[in-house]
Length: 448
Image 1 (cartoon, helix red, strand yellow):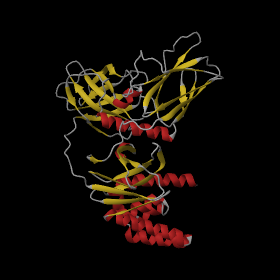
Image 2: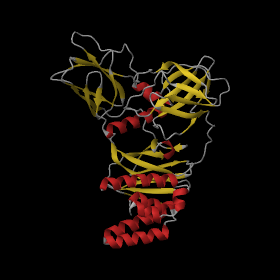
Image 3: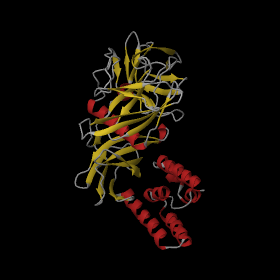
Image 4: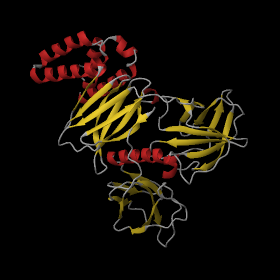
């Protein structure tokens, strides 16, 4: 996708405190912990000096630091007698956040609040974009390169792992493996292998950057790990990656076609109501083929209570907008609606609600939205049911109307499935319609 956007990058902002609130099991004898902080590329060397040593008092420890941008951090135990533990806890140090960390015998538990996870995801995307995925700590590998490869989506496996680049030479085939569940373990097992189109397998030889059969550090999670396999034959057109132990597979890895620069065919203007403190929005698109996952595609800044965004879309996508605030925090609720090629959306954000209008599709959406709101506000339950059924019967062939009815849960899901024309569920909006139906049925089950 070609994006027209403003990105909040790695620039330093006003410093905020990050705090670790630590707890230790009763049977743990840890006396204190060394704290380490990374460089700007999330790298912590083995010989790095600790920035602090914090004692364990009554089975608790705490550490705080003022930061102007996210860093990687490490917590490493010192046993009684001064022996440094061979293992450590790696995590992101995020300005303005507090994490609860509980140390057990051989493992740990960490609370991952919504704001903590969202800030990490936002910062990682900004760093990747601003550095163009480059870090001075990346290995130098010679060979033929497939850059930003294409691959088939597989709904049977998580969408958090993918191969970004592949480098071929006579000695080995090197895959740059990326993992987007930033706060959870990233493991590549020694049993991982590649498989060519003939079914031949090529074993993992070594890691150039990253760990094998162990949890990867934060710099690898941000920039990707480099894993070398036995060399694929010259001229290989595609292959698959398999890690049966970790239950991952990436099918149909191949050289991506050179993307053509395309003019934006979708645009959006966001209007922020007075009294609303939104400083901008994170833009996420859902890719139903990829296990209903969503990816951040933009971080847009607001000015004078307005912001705009445009992009090229190859098809309609369901999108989420998450408001960002001046202190770096991110709203827990989103503005959700479809992004449709060839259309222009006007979004008005209010306190706890929003309206979407605009051309074509969005004009039909706002008309349906107004009917739903007025029917519920000014009529009895029986009258409302009749008004909504009749309107949907008359306008259900309009994509904007049907999708608005589904998203709003204007009628029970079984009724919507009966009244909405089948082409809505089989045409270009099928992925969005089915995804919204999944969410609606889930809400209905929770409300029973």
